[in-house]
Image (cartoon, rainbow, N blue to C red):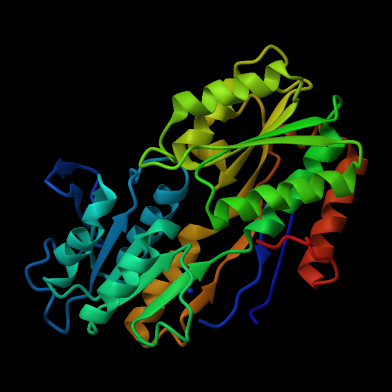
Length: 365
């Protein structure tokens, strides 16, 4: 295993559980998605006309039904791919999927031009990505939040980038359980799929470990193409939970969760007895409208995970169908001086125990 570190408060909080195998800004709308233009370092290729050449390294990314500027999950993967293009002096382009039926066609936009690496973003793309890898053995595939059973997926050109979401959720929930005054917490989530479930179950387990009197109200968005891109629904559900007395709400689900965070930030006691928790990235930076209530974020370090795997793909094989990324808590930012010292100490102790492997979340799916 790679060395692990999980820090809290003043510095970036990272729970590292690394295992051996980890655009353009202007899009043009097409039949199967929106595509972004080139990105890379100075001197890198400016288009994908020569991706088949050995000396040209091309990176493609396909989102699920979401945007690369969602300020959360997709954006984190997008930033990781852009950084990899800079590090490798490669060419990078993305496609934003509009409809799930277009997964294969969107990946084919890259494989047909002999791209070296294709990153697909989201659990729901698992089967389509595995199938594409079979048909394009010369392209390496990285599936973010995707698990491939090695007994069924035997291709060597594919790996799934997974994260210990339950541990990030547990740390955030432990903090929430100590911060609540009403003993009522809420969760406004995207679709009920394993990565989101792990966040949610971890959050509830951590909250109840810190405060057995706490109750947690959890709502998942109904299945559908907008499950992670429905801020109006997220805001409405957060308002319901606030009205029911919740004073800490975890928003986890792309733009859907962002809607919940921003609703909490508009509440009368935001930041002064009512708080919110972000997800995936440090949402203090990506959703500034939530800063009034945002005490931390339960992070998956998607950006460095994607970058690392793309660079690894350029240098050789993945080494396995599963690659573990890192997770952790974001800094407390402006709340660092407002969160009582004893609470910060308790949270730090809990995350140290998770880092050491002496504390298990108990989360199973």
